[in-house]
Image (cartoon, rainbow, N blue to C red):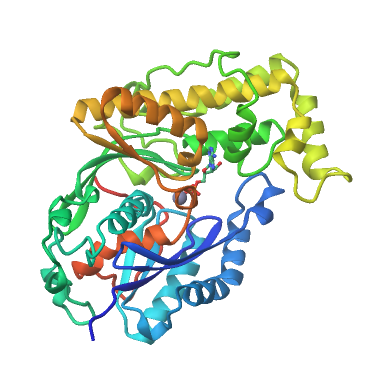
Length: 438
Ligand code: KG4
Ligand code: ZN
């Protein structure tokens, strides 16, 4: 019997426990995400100890739900994939330990996936799903381009090239196999990679990154400062629609890495995910300055008491609604605050655009992928799309559900590794600052 190429993936790197079953890296059979937002919201950020505890609680029901939704049993699986880093050590360990136990008990290969690679594959998964919908009759998108020789190892199914038919429709290489400049923009990362398919696997070259806060972190910190909810991105995204983005002229200055860092490691959560010394400073991001600029604006304009009463009205006070909505938040914001929010978002999106398009031009990249939680942002999508059209570049984003953390993207990233027989050792451990590419 031909294996179906079913990978069960588990993701637990931060504050979402997720499991998914994806067929051949190209068809999502299920994707279940248990969010811990309610647990962390009252602290205004993720509390690592609470995250590990919540993952422990959720992992069994989430995996069961993913299998049930996919309509498959454990015995039908061909591999188990898991996020091995970067992320919170304790949180990662829950997923890794569970995945290792499953792989061992079922005698299946275990595949370790870098979370950032997962975010990039979220877009590729969408594209493969779209392509397979339009290429009716095509059995899969992998057999044509991926080197599958290593897949003949025990436990790995062979490629389905035997059933691949060369028709006019599928002679055109799937879009997913073209190099792309990928902006991964989330709560922990703001990284630019040149992603290239290379004989079966994908390779990643680091082009740029933040030297301090991630863009999503800036959204979260500004939202917290203004008495809004956690995570901050969705609140700012929705409230920004009601403000004037040009009211407060925030500016980003050029990051001067060499002068600042002089060989010292970058001051960032994900310091080891990539060295910055050799990167072109034009493609480096810094979001701690704008966070401070917002703080200064709040203090100069005496907006702190208002932010405190907003926090009380929405979250901490005795009359706070159980689930505050955007309308509740809107009722608590005056025009000055809405203008501040819109201006902050406009500036962050503008900076992300400026550096991403400059990098695309310098590398001659024909297409751009934008992924990670912040890629859900409406202004970001609209402005990136317009600029790409203006420059004649192709651009792709994941669906909203695949923008934030999920396990389908981990299963998608695991598929080429599965075909290449690139399996994790049985002593796989969490690597909180796992690097992607060089
Ligand atoms: O990818 P993700 O779910 O987790 C990490 O890998 O970090 O990203 C979470 C981040 C948070 O900082 C959150 O505020 C931000 O993505 N985010 C957004 C939006 N939705 C989520 N930022 C801006 N606009 C949004 N609509
Ligand atoms: Zn993420």
